[in-house]
Image (cartoon, rainbow over all chains, first blue to last red; front, side, top):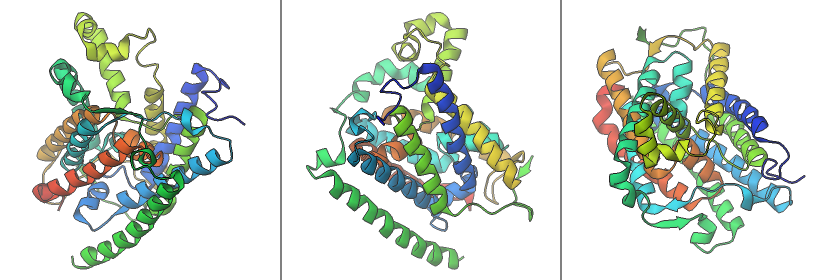
Length: 196
Length: 177
């Protein structure tokens, strides 16, 4: 098998849209299952009494990362053909900060707001309207901020390349950070949750 | 429209590690089938570009930003992320119905009324949209998808999301605690 299947021409654009819908169903299903259609559950990450955001996110990252790594080593998946968003360090640092602020102010991120609004959360709908408004604000100011947005382009850049380390070493480090984080997060939850 | 209160008939949320592994397998399927990760904010951008092309065609034509979504000749809503987000709506609704969690309600803390909460939700969405554009992706497209691919920019981004969230939490206690 040669994967990614789409990049090897195993199916066309119409089929890819059907696959998008099916993958989306899986994505939305697990978001809602985890409780991520609830703003209160999500922001609890930042009040330290429920760290499900970290636990779900890092379990997902480790699962997909190990999958990509093993399928790559087995020669099934051509990892170089999987799209990497190019790195622009400055805009991504500022963008991340804004997202973090927006997360606690709004209670969601874009994906979780979709899970919230489709399960009847009116604040999820208000949040989605805010995304439309913010997109227009960005679109209208694009010419003015274009230089900053495109500053510091580093192209497709992975952590192993950036730190000149073997891929497997970084994978191992991420697993260690995740497992240590799970342990620490549970300790913090108990301490903060128990103090209430 | 009332505050969302879990009722005794609701199922508890899934174990976070199990849900995470499920999410990770969905993400892996996207890598293997499509050679790309998951996303969310991009679907909103395509929709806004389409609305602009319908209601203000001359303006959309003149804008470098909107042309990024409109100029390739296909309909802007015939985009991978638009279909994926429609799937997210369906999948979340299905899970919510199974668990008895679908209710017209507002998620908020005990000390805030609906008006300020909805205004804050709107404001948060705006901040997030601007941030996601600067970062070239949101929690789904950058943190989750890029995180699993060991993308350097994604990890810098993810760290900053947590920094921004924790730095803001104290000032938003009125909304949540």
